[in-house]
Amino acid sequence: MTRENWEVALEVSGELQAELLRGLLDAQGVPARLNQEGAGRAYGINVGRLGQVQILVPTSHLDRARSIISDYYAGVYEEEDDSD
Image (cartoon, rainbow, N blue to C red; front, side, top):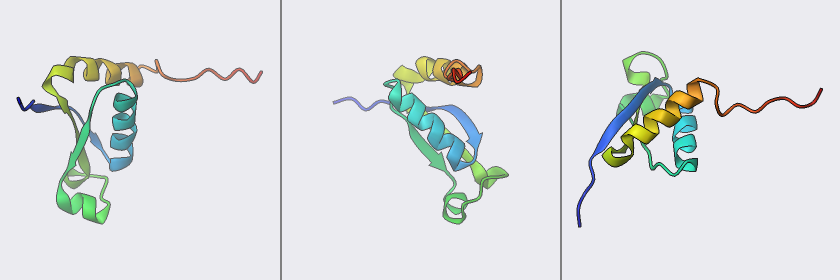
């Protein structure tokens, strides 16, 4: 059994943004984990160094994860408002 290495796909400020992106990656079939400094997580800090959260993905999924994240920030996943 081989163990796969995990790499940082992106580092964001705050757990909320990190959870949103982790969920997006998961929905696209890319496993993801979050890593944050213990004190930042314990106290709910979302600014500065303690508020940084790393989004980790297996090395074999890194390119795909970065592409999905790039598409997210480009607005690819936004829904159009058809209520007009």
